[in-house]
Length: 338
Image 1 (cartoon, rainbow, N blue to C red):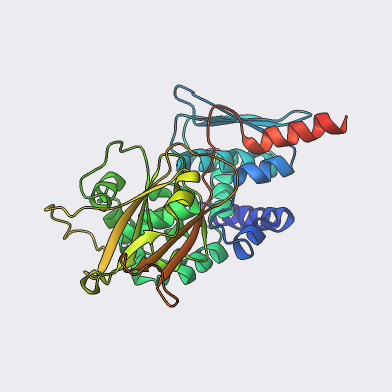
Image 2: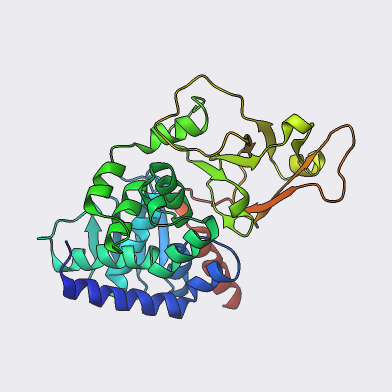
């Protein structure tokens, strides 16, 4: 466990950063679900460079104009947490640092304990957990379900393991709960969600339902989006995109997820009166949030007033080698102003 003084110190600094950056406004007002470390770095005039690195997770360089290096070969969750860790070195007043891990032991250097704890406090503040759980209708008992922890991790923008440890830090689950959760691998959850159709285990599988209608989710391009909605197929109703042309123009495709004979009894997935649809977007990135709009209609009748509908938004995150989008925009503004 982290030293109590370090925990208090880093929590205060992280809270100050969240307030000064207005990071929570993006969540509370605009519907996003995570704190974006790239945006916070840009506000501090810190350039973040993504590139493949052998063993390193990342590095922080303190200079007249400080910078952060992040291993682009990692998952989105590790990339976000690495950036937050390096921001911890910056905000805690540390000198330059090189990080070959993000999981430092209790006897590690104080600066690494501070950076690690700051990163958790920045990306997983208690108010953010409260907001997401309220939107999704999750309670404390829900937080011992591997499927829910995986989906929470995607919305927080961190790894499955880091999410479990974060909940322990906030005393929302126990140490034994963490050990039980870690027995289930995210790959098994992904495979079950796609019903054994998982072409690339490095891609995430997002599960959307009616509780996501107020949120803006941020998958990476080529992640899989499964939309789970109440089904009235026995009465002749089908969930269809409001406009096939509009869906195609936005780069999406929508198809029902076929049934499987696989045994999914080890993971809870919801009632039998639901239908799953796979929403694919090709390789669309960046830009603005894309609407995800479906209506439950009887095809031979067409859309009628009062038909059930689903509306959410997906803002596909751009993570690729080179400067982050925020760093590029800051550089462009600087050049334009000069």
